[in-house]
Length: 57
Picture 1: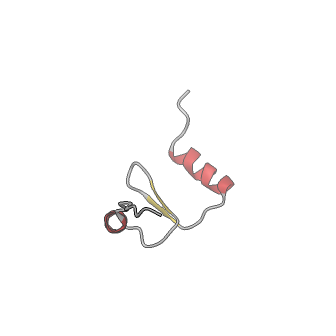
Picture 2: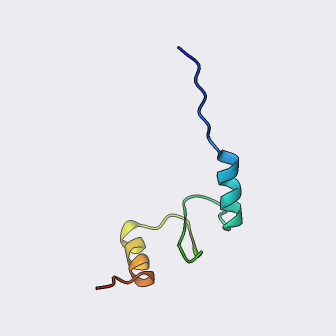
């Protein structure tokens, strides 16, 4: 098998997470910079996102 190298910037991703306040996974960082840490069941996550980003009709 031919050797191949795959660049994977783990350190850079880790540092980016640290600057955003992420201390574990999963975590969401919203466009306004708000951090939502930890697992959130899908229905609850949908409610949270709908409250923060109401549909513009």
